[in-house]
Length: 264
Image (tube, rainbow, N blue to C red; front, side):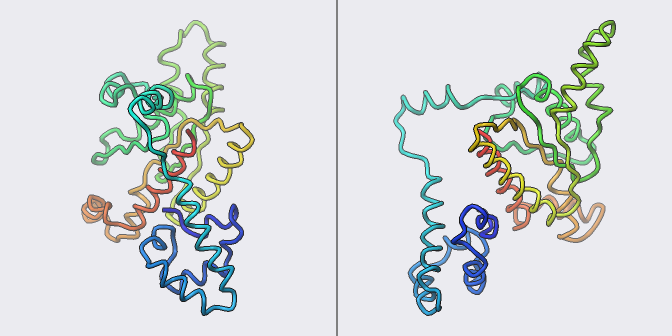
């Protein structure tokens, strides 16, 4: 769930005073608030000088949650929704697309898992290249390990072009490179800042009807979380295998999932 601080810009009622009140009860995210007894929390709010505003803040968070609930749908509506909304983006690799039943699902989170040097980054670069080339929209690539390679993207694009048509090949490559925005992020705190800003930008674009981001890639989450867990080499890898138990990892994945849902 989203950190409360990230909601302040869109919902001013959730200001620093509300966040401080919540923090005093170990509440830092929407999920933390849901895990608390809201009646008890409201009783604590009553004891504060700004009790009415605090209670309004609690109600606002609950309203945000209610607004994200999916309505009840019957079978026909589900089928129509699947046909209308469950679009896919080809990764550019026929075998991977076959395993994914067509490619990367629009509005859903796809996680690549594997040992070091197994090709995860190559899949990310190939997918970014293919989406930037064939789809009307851009790709946001968050690079946490200095692994983004424009040279490799060039190879992916040019291997399918006719070498004799240099001008057309150059235009295609220029289009792809312009459609990929890469941001280097080397620690988890910067990652949260980038995700917060990206969410705000995407919301603004959607309100203006001009959201063109088709794909968000993070390569990779584990390289940021390993230093927090401690260890290096094989010891770090062992910790990474248990990342599902890491709050930081879960928060980042949750943020990415929310952003991707918002890009639908």
